[in-house]
Image 1 (cartoon, rainbow over the protein chains, first blue to last red):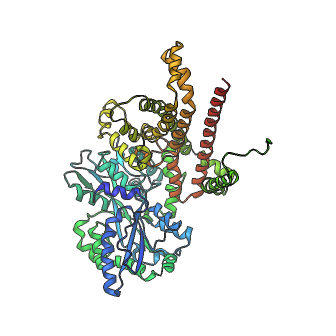
Image 2 (image 1 turned 30 degrees about the horizontal axis):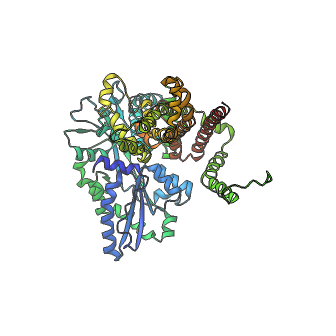
Length: 335
Length: 277
């Protein structure tokens, strides 16, 4: 894992890994978001082996990565995805609403709201924590440079925003105007709003910009693994949001390709013992209780709330916070 | 010979015109009209609110302002570069000549990432600028720097051939008639290259307005401060707001078209005046 390599991935809308496609009988395309590249590379190999043992058929899996909403838009516009594994339910809702490729109730079809793995949002600081950042509070202090991408273009950034929002609501006992004030101060400390999570991570890690990076937990662990604890430190905030990246079969596409059985088995295999282990090894929190216990040492205890604690639904959160003229825009328009 | 039956030297004028119109329609007009038709889904007040939102207006200011400034700088330095390349022999000239085209060939995002890496606080150039209080990366200045970079070849490549064609004898004659060097430049050389220079300027300007890839990495993308208009279009698309995105695109199209039209008229006027003089 090299950050510049990651970057090139983020840049191209479609990097499609063609693994011996010519030899394979059938192929499925997994359209996913940015940081899952390494996860699905490992998982695809495992699944191809599993499918061949089970059915004798040699299949190929292509994967495509990019910003979550960009990927959803690509599917709406006709990219022949067999499965979508995106950063948030809102983007898959959009596919259902705007293209009719999947039924509205897609999220009830697989366990755990169709999220085979979860993650959360943590803070990454420079080694030794020179700015003494312990919690979300510290991010609004004067002189702290906070790195987070633009929630208008990045799925990860929306989770970041909502994590801080949840903290603020708790801190001010549900007073929304105080919480808005808190977020305004937080974003005043953000010198750059990159268009994607990878961009922010690169600015923080490689270019040395900023004091703290609000980051996916799995990305923070990957950075730590690559650069070592002598460079960075993960700070676990007092409270954060449980991020649930959902997966779904794109029904009408699989019907057309005749790949319904593979696509279904592919997603179900994510929930299997083997799948859950791969997930955990890539620093996503497994949904299977037993695997979660095995890998508990890897994931710090953290007080988590869900999207439903701060909004009725993703649709509503999007409407209130991130749509044009929403709370996020107001931070900048009426400073 | 009747005046009405004027035959071109080359045959097949009608056929060529037909192809031209078909080609232009397929490549330019149809996609552009799609943008207009898509926008028509909005009511007039909706359209107006979308394209005059404070953030959007701030982005027009940055996009058109920085593009204009970059094109002006390129017109000046591009002329200088073209002059040096045409008039002076020096070792490595061919290499420098080839270098000019690099911003054409380089994928714009690569340019953006490279420029950002150079101009950030710990970069090659940024480390010397930052102590002086000059921040380039992630500010509007960064946008200007990126647009200057991508615009340079347009001016050099349009001015160069015209400069090459200027007859030396003209300058010699001017000198013989007692013109100073400045007079020779102002009265002889500059008027000759002015049409090419305005074309180069217009091309660099137009290119800068639409530029996305190289700018996005260096801009910082802070609403109201360093957001370019193409970013707002992308932002709207990410929110599945296709009509909003095309509305802004249509406004950009109209402004760009008007500006280019003005530049073309200016050019026509220069030529016309020269023809009279």
